[in-house]
Image 1 (tube, rainbow, N blue to C red):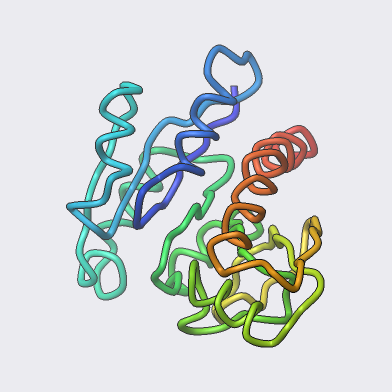
Image 2: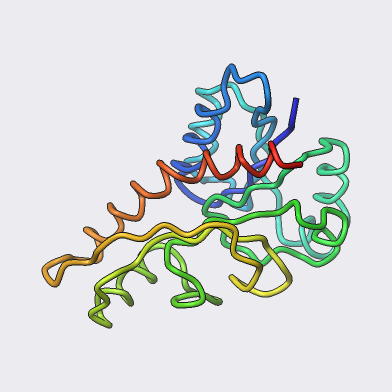
Length: 189
């Protein structure tokens, strides 16, 4: 049984989708969700789904080995960032090489980097009159949104689309593709 640990900072819709996708599967399961936001809605979702959670602060994540030790104890086969907003520290990446992935709400390398997340991305896509956007699932390295691309899915952006319209299209792509890509990666290990 493959073990998945999710990191999330916000509402947790991608985390919930992954938890439900792997519920009652015999190949993998989500064993824990970690968050840097003690008020994140993902904690409420996990409570309802009976998934173990832990909130941590910046010191525990970047300056000590507290979060690293939690991960070592959990022995995840894959660490999945689902709306997690902090840059992942090198000491954790070094301990879990090619085992940390992220979903980004744009077609990288466009609209990536520090500060480019959620509605910031969708507003930029609309402001630049893009005709296509999408999602990128990629490995995480020491730089924001620069790890090797695993998968991309595209959607059209209409001239009349608002940033909220684009967000809805991206959300649909994430719900459809993210769990399948995670499962494929686990099956290839």
